[in-house]
Length: 155
Image (cartoon, rainbow, N blue to C red; front, side, top):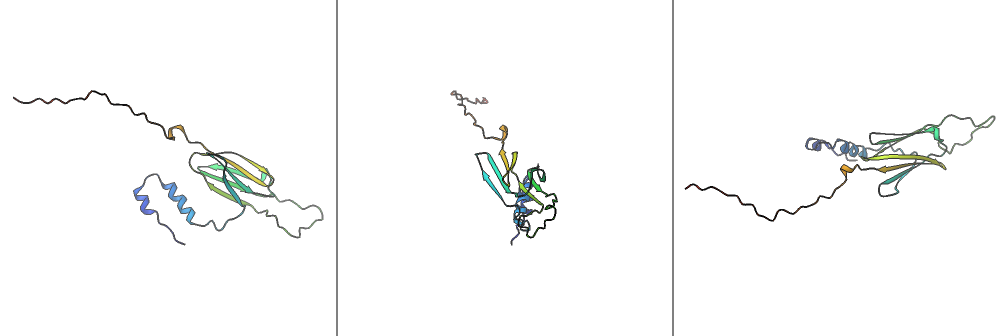
C-alpha cells in the first residue's frame, strides 16, 4: 500500500494540521476492525444518523462521548451467569467489548442517542454559526458626479 507524505504541505499551509492528520489516518487500516457493524445515513439537509448493531448490550453497558470532533462509542458487557445448572454449548452472539471512533466535521453536534431492538442510533446535526454562513453583500451605485483632480500649473 502506498503512503503519502504530507510534510511538504505542512511547510506551505497554516491551520490545516487536522485535515492532514485525518488523511493520514485514512491511509492506515484500523487493523481490520469490523465489530460492531454500523451505517451512516443522512436524514436531512444538516442531519445525520449513525446506526450500530449492538445486540445483547443494554443502555448501561454502552457509553457515548463527544470530544474535540471525535465521537467515541464504547461497549462493555457485564459478566452474567447463564443460570443455575446451565452450560453454554455455543456462543454465536458476540459479547466482546468494543470501542468505535468517528471523526466529526466542524460544527457537528450530537443531538441524542437511542437503543432500540439491538440497534444504537446516534443522531447528529450540523450547526453552522451565523458568522460562518455565506452572506449577501449589497452593491451600491457610485455617485453620478465625476470627480476631477485639478492640477496647478506653474506660470
